Each structure stands twice: as C-alpha cells, then as structure tokens.
Image 1 (tube, helix red, strand yellow):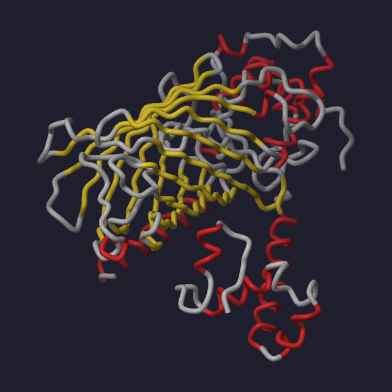
Image 2: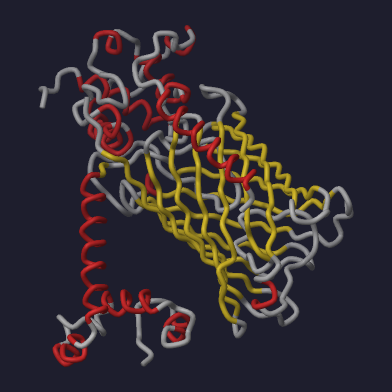
Length: 340
Length: 132
C-alpha cells in the first residue's frame, strides 16, 4: 500500500511497493511519519501489531533518535565559518575535531525543452587537523519524468600549507570521484559541452573514476572575502585528457559590531556575495565555444550558532548553460565537548 | 575495488590518524605577532559595553576549544594565563585574525574587524571571571 511520507511531493508518490525503496527504509519512514505512527493513530494499532518487523523498525528509529540526541547533547557551540558559496572555496577550513553535516540541492532549468532536474547531496565534513579538512559527498538526481538515481560519491581533501594569514592564502584541494553521467550537483564545472539528457537508466550505467585538483587562492580584505579557484580534472576511466574550470567569488558579512544579545535576524548573521564559475575546455579541446558559464548571487544566513542556510541562483551565460541553477543548502555543525 | 586502491585508501587513513594525533594543542612559543601589529591599540577600549558582543562571539567561536571560562581544554590553552594576558591588544588581535593553523588555532579573519576587537575585550574580561 503506498504511504505518504514527509518528503518532497515527487518522492512521496514514489514510496510504495516496487518503488525502489527497500522495505526497511519504508518501514522506518512509516514509523517516523505522523500519518503512519500508531501512537498517534489508534486505528492503525491492530495492523501495526501484526508486523513485528515494523515494531523492530520503530525501536531502531527510537534508538537512532536517542543516539542522535546524545550526540547533539554532547556537542557544544561550533566555531567554523560556513562559506556562502556553493562552488567556490575560500581558505577557511573546518576547525580540528569539528564535524559538519550538510544537505543541499541543485535544481536546474535547462534550455531547449530539456527536463528540469533536482540533484540533492549529503556532505559530511571533518576537520582532521588545523591544516587538513576531509569531506565525503553522496549525491543523487531526480529528473522530471525520467526517474531518480544515486549518482555517486566524492572524497575531498583540502590542505592549507601556510599556517598564518597572508595577502593571498593558498589551499590545495584533491578529490576522488566515483560518479556516473547522471551527476547533476555541479559542485564544479569543467571542460566543455552541455549536460546529457538521455534517460537516467542509461546515464547511471556510465560510471567514471575521476581525480580532481584545485588551487584555491583566497584573501580577506577590508571585510571582504575574495576567492579564486583553478580546477583540473582527469577522468581515470577514459582518455579524455585533462579538463579545466574556474570559479571566483566575492562576499561580505553585513555585520559590524556584534550585539550583546542572541539574535537570529540581525545583520551580523547574514553574508551576501556573488560567484562566477564555468568550464575552460580541456587538453584535447581547447575551444571555449561550447563551454558552460554561470554567475550566481549567494546568500548565507547563520540561523543559530551551529547551523547555516545558504541560497543561490545561478544565471546561465552561454548557449550550453542551463537557464538557471537554483541551489539551497543547510548545514549543521557540532564539536565534541573537550575538557583539560 | 582493486587491491591497489584499497592499499592507497588504508595508507591515507593511517596518515590521517597520525596527523590527527600529532596536532599540537599547547601554546606555540614561536607564534609571535609582528611589532607593527602588536603596537595597534583597541579602538573599542573606551566602549566597555562592547564586551557583551565579544562575550557572545567568544561563546560561539572560541569556547569549544578554550572553554567557557577561557581556562583552556585539551584542545587549546588557557587564555587567562599570564603569558597570554601580558600580550598587547594588538598582538591578541593579530593572533585572532591570522590564526596558527599548524597548531590548531583557526583563522578568524572572516569576522568583521570590530568583532575581532570585541573578542580582544572579552579575552581581557576572562582574567577576572571566577573559575567554574
């Protein structure tokens, strides 16, 4: 029996037998849904008792809730600066021992009648040391009228070689990607050519191992952040040469003196900026005629000491680009309590 | 996954563990502010009310490592120690701004300059707070 869960409408209609969700996933979703919760709806209690597996799932979900609550209870206010950009990196790394979870999505509105898509991703970031931050990305895609798919994972590392603040602060970035052709998150754009719009079932079969490097240059200047990234990407699964890309960003906090009280909607919690990014061809195709380029205003709102909401709308600048790339992201950060 | 990739992944994880364990946590005696930076005076020194904002930023950005009362944790040193409090406002401002990432101290240059001066006020205020 199809069930309703608290997700996006498209996801909601997909949840049911044969929808691709595993039984256990559906059970847990039933358990956490107010509609399917037996405690909240006595009429469902009888059927609920017939499914001991579902009860086990409820226990698991409650156990998970307790574990999450304990972890959050152990956490204290975090300190990191969440960059306002989605594509461009600045020189601020995760503080050592801090862990950040972020969920975000890229929604693209292509040209030429191609279907729109939404590509969500989960980001797990950890500050290994003051000079090394590692991140794991898990990403997927839903294309309008064309199904959904898991599109791969990325393992990213950022290294800050210089210990202090300089006029220009370099950061070295190395990433391994195992993604398929359905990938649409567009955390970076390299090479040339528009996105492919074959059926997801075909795109997901074309899996590539890729190695990506970035030289990140970033400066703090009179309250502004100015960041420039040069991107190199090599597909290890095919002989495509090395692809190039870029991104640049400028942003500024709207705050000046901090107020003494806790506030959520005050200037010091907002950062505004703009970023531009795109592909620069490759070693086998240096022409820039078919490359994609975007310019995107960015907005970040520090909701609480630990969480940040980011929004951006990218405008396509070339024929190969989509009309718009709408991005939304939410991050939550915590650090384990430490005592001497 | 090929055997070579597994070996590479294990090697990277081992390196990460070693780097994490080697992360310095004590005060770095070689971390000294340049003379011109140390000479700067706090433009908020005559505005003691600004310390309330400094206290808030401290709780948000610094207490995780230095402790709620600034007396240090396993992650970062005691800010009430004489060695810290003897430094000039300009030196503290420079250290907050530039960080010492190899010793685990983040860079706070992303904070607007007035807020970093508010943090200096708060560091000064820590020395008179009772031990909790």
